Image (tube, rainbow, N blue to C red):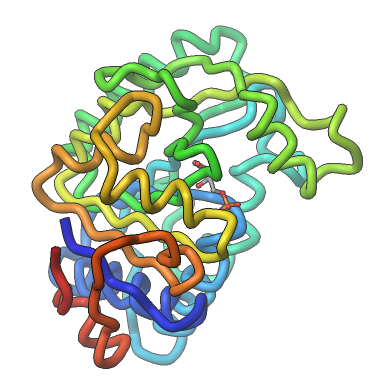
Length: 261
Ligand code: F6R
């Protein structure tokens, strides 16, 4: 695993965007796995800037998002489809038909999950997967205890995740209690994985994921078994790591993974 510790969330966002930009330039029809949430917003802004100012070309890029709330349609302002359109897709030259988010309103959610897995396989698998991390160590909506080999499926959100996500809704009662989510097994099949985290509220989860034992109780720790994973974290999120990790010399250098453990 590589660990890049950035001085703040701006540097984290630039470093992660550089990694994605480099991979897109190398393979224009790349398959990206994308995440929602507060953490990637500035990284997406940087990718939008690169598209506008540095000719980063998304015209052939294909995307699959990690998850979607069950029961929300794509035009609900808290749905993850809406988030992706607002925070990335509407501002870059991507073909919307190439962007995939699970349908939270599917008549048969289990069939929707199965079809999503098949579509990812048909696309050749995910080349690079972006992840955030929950305060409890979840990745996508794989909560503690989710099996290592789990696939895209309907999941129950924990009380902690419901509370954490309540900030985006009018009240905690409006937060959906279930979601459709790629499984840990689906995520671990991506060829490369980049996990980003900022803020002290993620410090425990980051320390357990990187330096603790690999356990289903901390889903992000399962990434330890993957051959090509980079954690890009800011110093607050890194504050409980015991080992020392170097800072990137410049955001650009981060794309080469300048500091490893
Ligand atoms: C979102 C997702 C979640 C978030 C995690 C962190 O698609 O899969 O696992 O990455 O909950 O969320 P933020 O970034 O809001 O702290």
